[in-house]
Image 1 (spheres, rainbow, N blue to C red):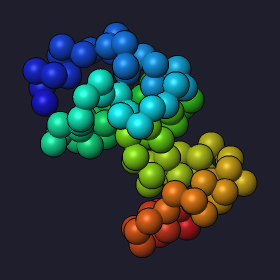
Image 2 (cartoon, helix red, strand yellow):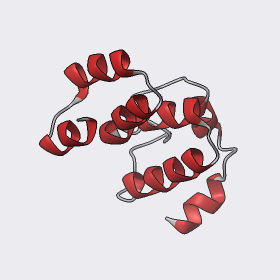
Image 3 (cartoon, one colour):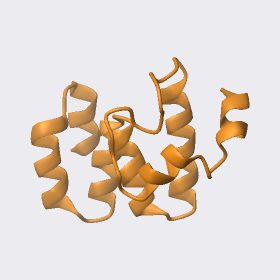
Image 4 (cartoon, rainbow, N blue to C red):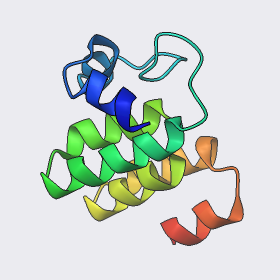
Length: 101
């Protein structure tokens, strides 16, 4: 994971497309996502949160299927209607419902 994160940095074209709002089925990967994709996405989300890059955070969370992160950030940003709407179509586990509540 570390080597791939170094290779991609923040300038990898698929990642840049995602951060810009172009969400694809493959997320930020050009091929099938590796086993560590979720861990790398969570690390990137923490960095984006610390840098207050909230639009990019939401794009990455949505693209990488990080539903709990996506919904809680919407709520934190006061976008409650959007969070409730997204929750109705995207929530799949109890933990996501608790986090949103």
